[in-house]
View (tube, one colour):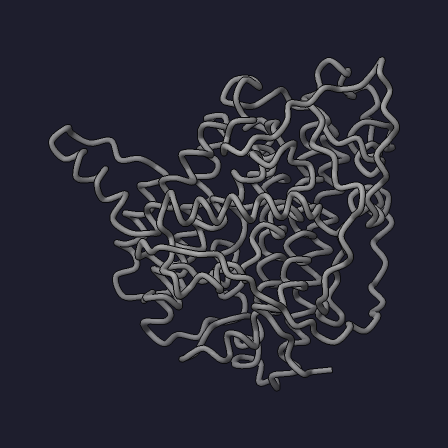
Length: 460
């Protein structure tokens, strides 16, 4: 997972500590190129204006009753259908999703709209008084879409639950790293990335997995004891917490005990256990496959570190298609409480959309974590560093070229999503595309606003 979060492995006694952030200077206004005509209509619905609509007045005759969210993780996921999943449908009532998922869009979806009886429960309402915009500066020239400020009540609740999980269930980090864990701001991250999650319980599915993925990256690969030496063995054993070993009775108990032996494996085991209870078998297997891709990317980067190889730009981008955020947006349907069927997920044009989304979001990480990585010991590969090395550019010019690479990837993602929406205008496909786009936008917003972790280089 790109730019690991600060996590650890010893089981401490922990107490919450507040943290503060210092905003960067306001970002200059940058004009972005217009989207091609072929995709502009789709993008208008994909990236709506960033304002929460006010709650509609209640209508007794048509009011939808929603079960309240509960404090116990996973409780709201029970009883909603096989494996906790309802049939594909439309859950968010906001006007931004109506155009793409329910109403006429010009893409032939009118006859495919689902009846009211087929729709899962509506998500919990957002706060009546949205929080003020968070401080943070966007990379100048970076093509991106702003998002509504995440619902503060959800952010607070997700943050509270994930810290309790980290402390009580998996003993994730020692006490001295607590402030760093808080600074990760994973609650804000996941609420921004999954705006159609029906409940906080659904948000927690993604939040646990995100924290577990970062624990593996941090403790096995990076800052907190990580090393490229012997990484393959560590990753394989950790992966068995996601994809269980089927062996003889004589040796099964030793494997089961190993899953509790360190923080990364404890986190993987617990997070995946929560996930599979809510996901369909197909969704769970999809996630395992994406995590195998991620681990393969880790190993490629580790091999280069051991040999001192600085990859060509195309090689680096190939590695980043595997060592990237892909596992996160591909669970957007599970978090949204519906399913993109396996045959639709496997379409080559859907795979292209998902790959481009993962690639673009990962270059966002390279750009925002650039100064942080320059301060770390040794040579830390990221796109600006690789471009500067092989194309004999200054640090500034290499960074600006990396911004252009990101923008090309982001435009390609949006064009591919528009093409797929036209070619296959089925409701679960359109909703999944909207969910992936929301994840891409939310990921950028988290990087922009997390001034605890990131600051921009002085290139402008």
